[in-house]
Every structure is written in structure tokens, then in C-alpha cells.
Image (cartoon, rainbow, N blue to C red; front, side):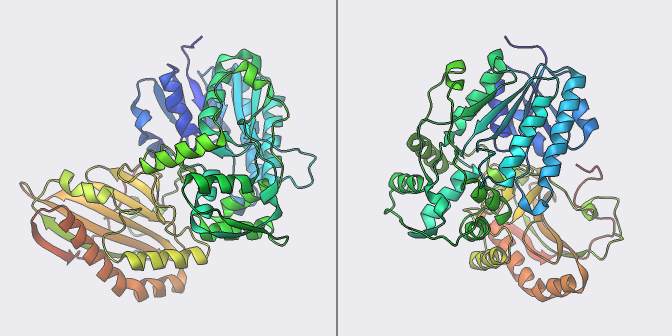
Length: 513
């Protein structure tokens, strides 16, 4: 029975939440999507659906959780911390779960549905992150609102962190030195089956308050999956040597160098692989029957969707967007230090829509229009020093949303066909943004500008800026020229340097998002 009240989905822009919401909408549910950034949620294709309400909130903020829960009848709790660098992730997970319990009780929700992980708590090898997942479930189930705990092993699908690690390792390494966990049994599940189980818990009250393992039909180990993927992808069989000295921490650093995932996310995943994750009971299959996709089917589908450029959500979507304070209007002469700028403009006989096309495709497989080898070298250096590098690419070759990862940038603002603002996430001694602006400059004429702004951190930051400034000027001058040429429209003027801007010039509106 459908309810007139909405379902609350926390973690709405995460990998699972971003796919669950459109599925719930297709099933005629009303949805209240909660995330830490309204601008990030608002960019999603489903955000304009008539049955969606978007709300800004943080599970660590009790007041915002209470506000988000009021008027809902059920909630999906799809939030957890994966970043081992944060150190106190368990404390954050604990606080978020406690806030969910309080908010759900006050709002009189009928049920909470939580997606956690498998793994035996009594296993001496169980990771701290898996322990934290179990603790979150215990806290949620201790409250007055019935909380269903779905325990999944490895989730496979386009853009999932587990699948991306597997894909990049096999694609790039014909020979692998692996830890002993490569032989640990695992029962992976397709993201499609996960979504069906989540939705099914809304429709089957028998699941209320229960704990259920959700797994696919195959019990494999990581070596089996490596062999299976290489066969599906048409690659020679990979040679694998198991060695005893690769700890999860060393494995994470290796994964960081070879795949797009940072070590901070790879480490908890690598730690989890040392624990057997197999369903002890399959009773959920009797309550919520569905066709379970095999591991082979899931991999084949994932690869086809990547080839067809149909990646709805990606592991890199998750996380809060925190724009630096100095890029907002109103912070005119920033008290924290001098803001350094460099920019170029070109004037074309073209519409903004025409110029926007190459801008929206920048990065990923398209590249940066000029000096791609230099960008790639910068990406390799960034990866070696612990940064994100270029391998994250982009989720989609044309569509671009606030919060998307774009090589070693993060999308801060998108206003088609006028503006794209990128926040640098590479390792630099300071904070940097790159802004593309398209503005009318007369009848049938528009102006495209590239502006880079940098807030240096100490003397090292200032030295970094001025040492690279000549190279940046060459790169951005030619990049702007190549973008303009790609429109195939006449260039009226430029590219030329932008004169120093007024002190009150800004990148983003005054309202902080």
C-alpha cells in the first residue's frame, strides 16, 4: 500500500541513494531526498520530479534530522563514513545513528531501513569499518522505531567502489602480487538486487526490525572474480602470486596507485576483503522474491553500461561539497591572505549554447584540449604524493552535475550554458578554483573566459603559484584557443589576458550552498 506521506532517503546523492530514489519514484512513492548540499541534490535529474522534495540536512546535526524526518512515514539510512583519514569515523557513525533514532521516534516513523555489511563480529580479522557498520545497526535497532538491517557483501555495478577496484586492477595489471585475502570467500550482489531488497522492505512488513543477509547466487573469492572479469573483458588470464607481506595498508597504497580510488577509501575496502562475507541464511529470498543476477551477468551488464556511457551514480559522487569561504561574494578582501588570479578571454561570433558544448565535455576521455601530456604528468605526480590524480575521470562524457568528480577537480557550480566552477582537489599548497564563464557580448557574440584563483598557504604556496604561472599562462591561453576552435565559429578577438579584476569580483553567489 502506497502512503500519502513521503519516504525519507538520507545519503540521497551517494552511490546507492542516488539510484534508489528514481526506482522509488518509478514505483509511485513520494520521496524526501536529504543531503548536505542543496545545490548538489538539485542537479540530479530526479530532483525536478513532482513527487520529490529535497531538503538540506546532515545526520550529525540532530535538528536537521528532526526537520527532515517530520511528516515522513519511513526512512532509508544510507549513510556511513568510508574515509579512514578522518580517524574518528566510528564516532561520527555512532552519532549519526543516535540522531536517526531520536528523530525517527519524534516523527513517529513506522520503519527505518539500513544497509550495512556482512562479516562475523567474532572474526579476529574483522575491520574497524565493518565493526562500525554493525554498531550502527545495533543503535538503530535499539530505538522504538522498527529498524531493518540489510547486510550486504561486495556490491557490484557500474561506478561501485568494489567494481572499480576490480576493473582497474585487471585492466592494468597482467601480473599481480596479492595478499592472502584474494582467496577469502565472498558472495557479491548486484546493485539492482540491492535496490529491489531496499524497496521490498517498504512493502513487506515481515522485514520490520529484522536482520537479513542479502547476497547474490555465487560464492566466489577475489581470484575467481579476477579470472571472470578478464574473461568477460576479453583479456588474457591474469597471473596471480599470493604473498604474505601485503597488509591492508600496503594493499590500499597499491590500489591508490593503480586505480582511481584514494587510499583512504581503498583501505577499509581492503580490510573488509580479509573477512569471509557469505550469507548464513537466505530467508529474505522468501519474503522478497526476485531474480538474483549472477556475478558474471552483473559484470557483463556493468561493462556494457560503461561502454554505452550509462553510469547513473559513482563512488566518487559521495561526500560533502565544502566551497572555500573566500570564493563567495561578500568576502571581498579576504582576511586569510592574498587571492592570486590569472585568466584569459576569447570573443566569438556564437551563441552561449554553442560555446557551452565543448566546456561541458572537458576532462575525462575528452581531455583538457591542450597539453594533455602535461595534465597527465601532473596527475601522476599528484597520485604519487597521495592525491586523487586524473584516473577518476568523469561519470558521464557530457552531463555534469554539482558534486561530480572531474579528474582532479570537483564541480562546485554549474549554470548551463553560462558557468562551470571547479574546485581543485589535487595536492597543492593552498586552495584553487578554475572558472569557465560564457557571457553575451553583443548581438550574436559571446565571450568565453577561463579564470583561475588561488589562495596560497604560506610561502610555499606563493612560490608554487609564481613558479608555475608561466606554464599556466601558456596552457590556459592555448586551451581557450582550442575550445574556441572546437566550436567551429569565428573568433572575433583573443585569446587575451584578463586585466586585474575589481576587489569585489566573485565566483559564486553570496548565498552559500
